[in-house]
Amino acid sequence: MKDTLLVTAGVLSAGMGLKGFLLSSHFIDGGVTGISMLISSLFNIPLAILIPIINLPFIVLGYRQISLLFAIKSTIAIAALAICLSVIHYPDVTPDPLLTAIFGGFFIGAGIGLAMRGGAVLDGTEITAVLITRRVSSLRVGDVILLFNIVIFTAAAYFLGVNVALYSILTYFAAAKTIDFIIHGLEEYTAVIIVSEQHEEIHTMITEKLKRGVTVLNSEKGYGKRGSTQKQNVLYSVVTRLEVSRLRDEIAHIDPQAFIVQHGVDDTRGGIVKQRAFH
Image (tube, rainbow, N blue to C red):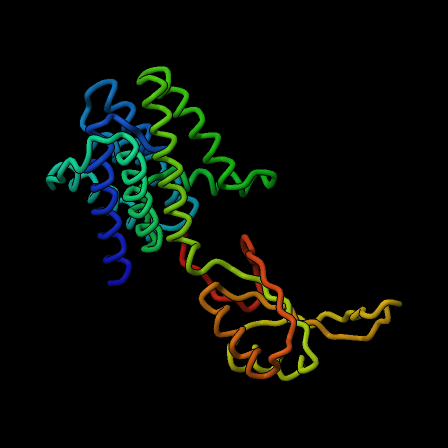
């Protein structure tokens, strides 16, 4: 039920971004959706027909490389988006090109992100990017998608004009940032380094109360003009952004003078961390 609600909300949001903003201005997005919109603008073929057709090879690829359930969810989501574009009447919100680019990208990004949280995709580009990065370790998913979109926006500049291409790039960035926030924003991994005299009690709190993993690092604490050193155990743990506040509060309750350093982490593998949703 949760996945169904997420995918439904994603489809409606993406439909709003497309029909409520972008189509009337002939702006395009990146990825497979952008290719569909570019072909639709050039040959006057309904977008509701192009999106399922162009996404079909990527769905087959997802079935072979990921899972049948993923392919079924994605097929239903993309078919629902096509029906949504054909049936639902969205108002043309604004003729302003800047607002159209920004908010069109926002609604499309929110739609793709919500669908991904529900275990489906509305755009097959991510499937290809993930599979390529598995084979070419020097490339990241973002790198592959960027290269893919450079080709699309270059074609848009040639066929639709430079202004349309530039606004479309703005749409893409707005969509990408929205997707990133929905997928990673609230649950972004954060590494926390803790230096405290009560490290044993804090260690117990993290493992038993928060149910998270922690690594004990043997180190030396330096201080004073002559650089005097003292043995000191340092704790290192990785939690999500939602858990950072509780962790800091629990540490402050044990040792108000504890020294804490935190920084964002792109991703983790293994260990005891909260697993994020499929994306």
